[in-house]
Length: 316
Ligand SMILES: NC(=O)c1ccc[n+]([C@@H]2O[C@H](COP(=O)([O-])OP(=O)(O)OC[C@H]3O[C@@H](n4cnc5c(N)ncnc54)[C@H](OP(=O)(O)O)[C@@H]3O)[C@@H](O)[C@H]2O)c1
Image (cartoon, rainbow, N blue to C red; front, side, top):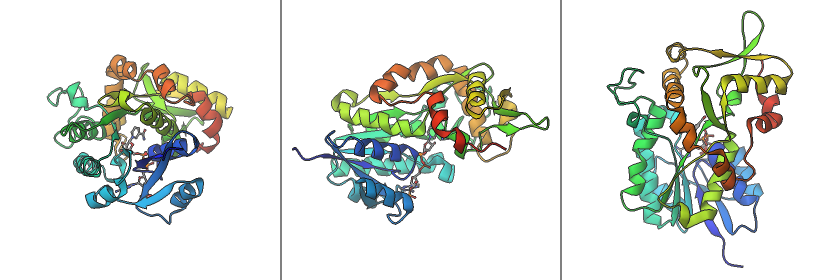
């Protein structure tokens, strides 16, 4: 059998990268091998990946030389940054540049860069429908990724831009699950009115990335945008009610109110939901469900995600 093509995966112990490592390892005849990149090979998650059959190597996205070593000899590299670890679009840019330079130096044949829209192409800074944040962004955790795309294309790089969606896992890990009001009733809160949110099981992002690596050449130079479903707040609340056996209402608030909630990132997320709602046609339109399923046949609907995960959502 031909030697397997190695895919070096940044963020392998996390959501996106972990899904990709598991997708590669779940397809032993697929012709690909997984190289899991971590800062700590002794962590429980890194050991789990090694036990599944991944090669585990050490690198840090803030250390270009370590990335170059980790990418050496790889056919592909999956590149992602970690906005919520530092809240800095500038740092994301530096990390993207490090990964692009390292992949180029290592001669990688196909890079997937996990990115998002630069929302300023839709809402210029002078547009006051939403506040400008940090002096030069509308949605910092989107804009920083979008403005870093050029690092991968500047040198005619073999890259696919993967635009992801809102993780349903945020209901578990990001404090977005149902809250109990003073009236004792549960609700989920989003500033989206009757708009739709493009969402996805975070594990399915890696499955789609695997589909892109398998598709190879046809995806180079392309932007691929993925989602599992486009759902209104009322639809998500109804699905939650069914899943947990207790009524969950949808609490629509204004983007202004959401921005004022005060948790770290509230303004960023308030702007994000306003952007995705006001540009729903192009945002959801780009994230075609059938095309996402073609890349990842196991793509879950929200209901399927809830079947598997509702018990993990903290219910107060
Ligand atoms: N939450 C959402 O709804 C959503 C939706 C779309 C996009 N995103 C974007 O997804 C990105 C995060 O991806 P994720 O959710 O897959 O991350 P994650 O689950 O938080 O995983 C992060 C992993 O990356 C590793 N890591 C952190 N800092 C690192 C560094 N400096 N160098 C190397 N590895 C590092 C850590 O592994 P070790 O500790 O093992 O090194 C960690 O396990 C963010 O930029 C966010 O904006 C999020």
